[in-house]
Amino acid sequence: MIQLFHVSKTYLPNYRALTDISLEVKRGEFVFLGGPSGAGKSTLLKLLFRQEEPSEGQILIDGKNVTRLPSRQVAQLRRKIGLIFQEFKLLPDLTVLDNVALAAEVIGISKKVSRAKAYQLLRELGLKERYDSKPLSLSGGEQQRVAIARALVNEPMLVLADEPTGNLDAEVAEETMRLLFKIRDKGATIVVATHDLNLINRYGTRVILLQRGALADDLKLASWQENGK
Amino acid sequence: MRIALVGFVLRRVHHNLWQLFWTHVLTCGTVAMTLFVFGAFMLVEINLTHLLKDWGEQIQLTAYLAKKLEPAALQALLKRVETLPEVERVRHISQEQAWRDFQSALGAQSSLLEGLPRDVLPASLEISLKPARHDGTVVEQLAQRLKEEKAITIVDYPQEWVEGLELIVLAVEWAKWIFGGVLFLATFFIVGSTVKLAMLARQAEVEIMQLVGASEELIQAPFVLEGMIQGVVGGAVALALLWVGYLSLKNETTSLAGFLAPLGQIQFLDWQNIALLLVIGWLLGATASVISLRRFLKTWNSSRGER
Image (cartoon, rainbow over all chains, first blue to last red; front, side, top):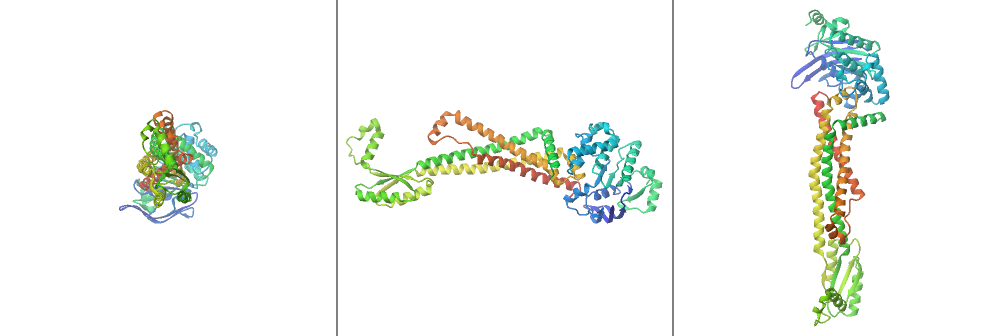
């Protein structure tokens, strides 16, 4: 699903955020992108959904080279990717239902169908009572579930989550992770960027460790998991 | 664009117009003021041109004849003048006729003429021009040709008046484009700034739309449509103000109406000019918003790392 070949990213004038990253994530895989703050996790995610372009190397998503897509095709790419952020990125003046439906409406699905799909998802995520509320009246966990519903409304093949539990307490964070695993079970590929070692250790799934912008080897991963460094 | 997306854009426009209602009202007002000034110049220009045309149609050349012209020579002269391409009609005023006309013009004062010989006034030809042959150059050329006739001593025509009015019309036309141009430029930036304000107010929305895969056209369409609406509404308001101004001039300023009465009624803009004003408003709104939007998005996207 995701292939990176010798990908580097340098910010002007001379800050190297990623160095020579090559990796592969298979379809249906659940992968943690771990590492301390500033390791380059968010930069790597931005390269995957093409908010930024790599300075060197090639990136293939679902077999398609996305390294230098024209802006028209970037929009097409993002329709296949569900994005989840630490700060939720919900629109405060829209209702929960409209926030979720928005993602479907902008790709040309009718308002009626978009809202029906959004409502169905909110029901599945236990938010059917809150569909008409404004996001700011919801708890952090509820807002993250709304963001997850929005990421799923277009049935993406790939879900990228950047510190999805960063603003949530432990119980709600676990609930969110369970939701992400459920989405994986339905066939999507999931990449979760986090600096939370406890979260990674709890699930025992594949971890790609970044340190100072480079892939760390298994030894460093083991050491990081052991020492929390 | 799919029907569902058209519906989406219209809903966004409706929502956004209400969100920044007073900003949009002020921008519409600015567009309206600009187009009002431009339209007022158009009105003055149209009415002066109309006036000029009216006057032009009434222009007659008077060619004064040499004394003691033989009837055969007069007939030959009349024939030559009548066959000139610019000439519609020629009327011969004999010395006797000229005397009688002068006498009746003097009315009660006609006794002043007592004692003067009845052939003191020269005979003349009153020459009317064909329609569309009234511009200054044509009249001037015709007068020169008539002067070449030996039987004609003086050719008289109101050249200065016509040329003066033509200059005024030209000045109004230039003023329209110069004032209009400056105001258009100012309005262009104001509409552009409103679009920027709208973008800033909806930055989060635009970012989310980009992240969930909305096309750039879909993201920009509501803003461009809002610019167009501002332009057209501004144009309509300007036309309404011009209409009110026109009615008060026409109905209430009797002295002005009296002054203009012999020259025909004041005219309002015709359909083409009304459409032109609305199209200018529409174009102003559309281009200002497109340019401002592209510049804003370019800066904003590059600041976020997007291309």
